[in-house]
Length: 228
Ligand code: C5P
Image 1 (tube, rainbow, N blue to C red):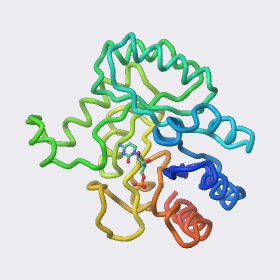
Image 2 (image 1 turned 90 degrees about the vertical axis):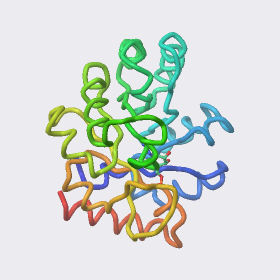
Image 3 (image 1 turned 180 degrees about the vertical axis):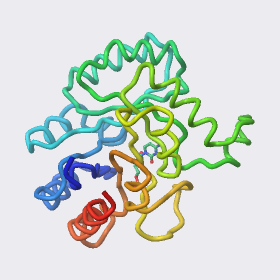
Image 4 (image 1 turned 60 degrees about the vertical axis):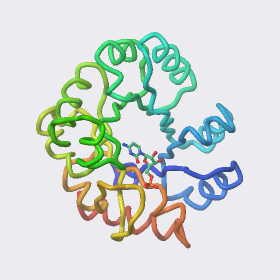
């Protein structure tokens, strides 16, 4: 994969106008764009069609988490949209993952392990007694039988690759260029992520809130290239 193909830009903006502005500005630089629940609830399949018309790869990140029957129905609809990548929560359990795996066809189905906005303290508060890394490795091993890869932070990427093999995709959000405080608690730089074994990095606010999204995207692609 070329360095630029490993960058997924999260389009976490509230309007189609802003999506158009970003996709236009990043058009020659970025190939892969992620649509979250906000945009999809507002615009539905229209937003996917727009990106496909622009010949972009599309990651529809709805993080499904429901009983097997309901999730399987949703997955069937997602696949019918022709998106390249999508997500379900691994915590939906084995039967749900099995139901999803029967529907995923050519769409890369990733399992969300533990959100990068959570740390060990959050997990303890929710009643989990194992450490974060151990939980993520358990979830990765469970997902491996049914999905194409997982979403985790760069700090766990190497351990997941070692446990699940190089063909199991590791996709990492929580990417930051500077040490700023926000909702992401497990964060790393693009070069750390690539050196740790991430196949793709997901970057939202560092690019979309930047005064020059194209300059920031160029900087990140250069870091991916140097770390590869
Ligand atoms: O703005 P920022 O770079 O933090 O965006 C990260 C993106 O990755 C968001 O769209 C978020 O929904 C997504 N994501 C995440 N943590 C996960 C899975 C997806 O932050 N575990």
